[in-house]
Image (cartoon, rainbow, N blue to C red; front, side, top):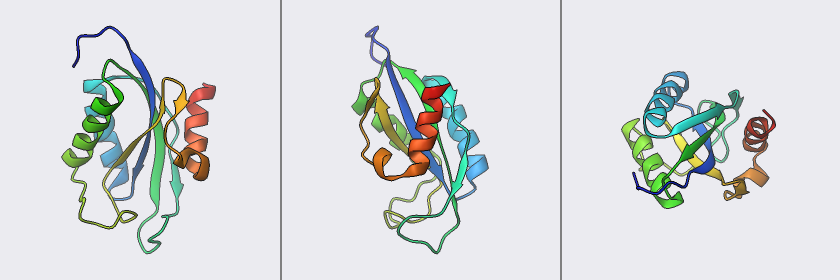
Length: 130
């Protein structure tokens, strides 16, 4: 971690459709050991996008504080996805153990999927309302 004292606040979108309950629980434990978790949304079941012949996804969001830069946090999220066995050889919209995306950064929406995916908007907005 960097030595700066500036804390960035961010909301991360969460998705899984391979052993989702266990993988999301483990991801939150790993994430919580590396950054401060402020709030977690409720989780909702959603139909897959693109490749529809796969299990439904469990989606949610988590709000965190971190001294990491956006790029450092993105790299950490990729490492958590890898730790949980994400197979990057599968198609983009295929099944996955874990999908983590930075949706808001210090109050700004940085992921355009927020505007096109109602489940993402719902979980992010839920965190912002609490």
